[in-house]
Amino acid sequence: MARASPNRRAPRADTHRSPTFDYALDFRTVNFRDHPELYKVGRGEEGVLLVEPYKGEILPHWRFATPDVAQESSRAIYALFLGYKDRGDFVGMDMARKFLQMGYTRARRYANHKGGRKYGADGSVLPYKNDPVKAEAAAVFYTVWKQAEADPEYTRLKAEHKQKYG
Image (tube, rainbow, N blue to C red):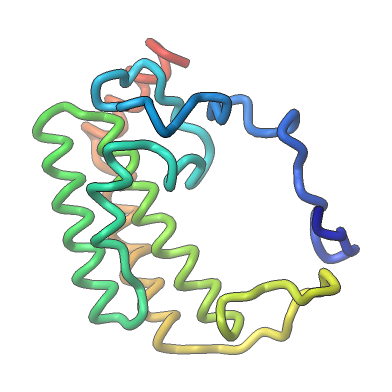
């Protein structure tokens, strides 16, 4: 377990995980397209690298090295979002939204910290830097993430999913 420092929250034990995302599921065997009732929205990016078949469909498009790469990536992921929307597939839409959000957060992390590492071995926050290329890549993802999140059909399906399945 990583040591906590005054600048960093201690890692949460599994018992303190978000009650809104079920990490107890066997993600290696559950197909969430066939069983959307098992999917919980969670907070932010929770479960983004677990939920199949969506992870396998979206992850190959997820890149943020430069603004041009981020533009191409976010465009491809948003196209998947729209395809899921056309099929009324809320879980797919939410997973695409999570990948767009993760594009923003990871690009920001690399913009702020060389190599993307925020904490040193001793738990201290590493020095900030300003990488304008990564910051611009983050801005690309941010715009598309917010566009997806504001989509009226996404908002409706999200509320419906939460009401039906929690």
